Length: 66
Image (cartoon, rainbow, N blue to C red; front, side, top):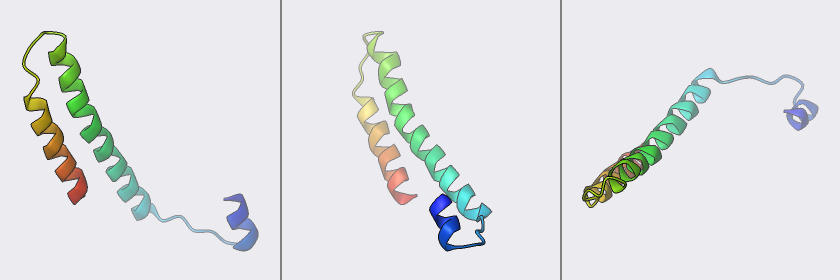
């Protein structure tokens, strides 16, 4: 912002761009936390964790589509 202010005297803020970036960041966090939380919760109980790979792949495809 400092160097942009030196070159451009008037700066603008794009609210729509901010919303899009915030939404994509939120989706990335949810897509990362969901398989991790499922693994942590089921691995301590000694249950089968093979289904977590499917959740991870589906979330990766959704994030790729976004």
